[in-house]
Length: 304
View 1 (cartoon, one colour):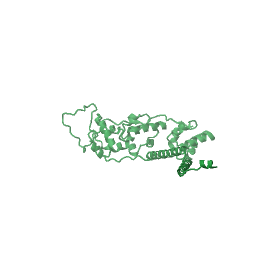
View 2 (cartoon, rainbow, N blue to C red):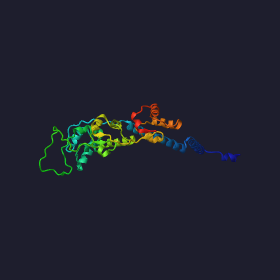
View 3 (tube, helix red, strand yellow):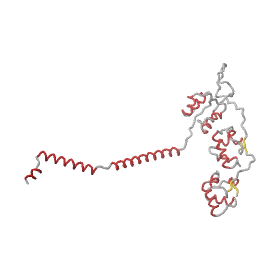
View 4 (cartoon, rainbow, N blue to C red):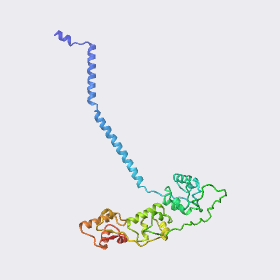
């Protein structure tokens, strides 16, 4: 008994050491129990990172959509009579053009570019058709020979007065046939730039040919002023209009036509599949009226 008591009896210092070690062991056990696992922390971090990236992407897409939906406003210029070959950078800016537009014009001139006619200014990609329409009446161009040397003449050149009437261009405006003219010839008409010329050709192809001059008003960008300016120079020659078969044409072909809306084409296809072929214009017109207005000229572009 005395030997057992000898083995299990401790001094004061030994008891303090034992208690300290037990306390440290207990603290380590508690720390392991309540410490979050590395895996859960990693998963939470990744989840938060994914959420932040998703929110950022959504904000970017919303900003891009708002910018795309925002209508492009055409700047109101303040033009005065000018010669684009001699106009200074400051004078271009005074008319309301942007720094970027003026820089591109000056670079064009620095590389030897010259404006021989009013339409040459409209052909610059930095000038929109709407802006050219505002500038064109104020362009004053003395006759410039395309073969003339760019070296300065020894004779003193007289500065053209802006109060003088601009000399009419010698090149006559052509009379064009809307159903056969190409875009290169269209740009020779007043107030018709390259973009509008291409739109007219594209609209003619979708339509199948023009049967009336007034159809030009349906071309994107064709306002009353532009239509009035070109009307004396256009006519309609004899041509066979390309018609679309409403009973055999597929959905894509029908919806491509400018005078048929998406809902009207759906009505035509449903009629063919469920009730049979469309027999005549009266039946087609009644069918299309259920989905909106019907262009009366459509009759000349369909067959049964």
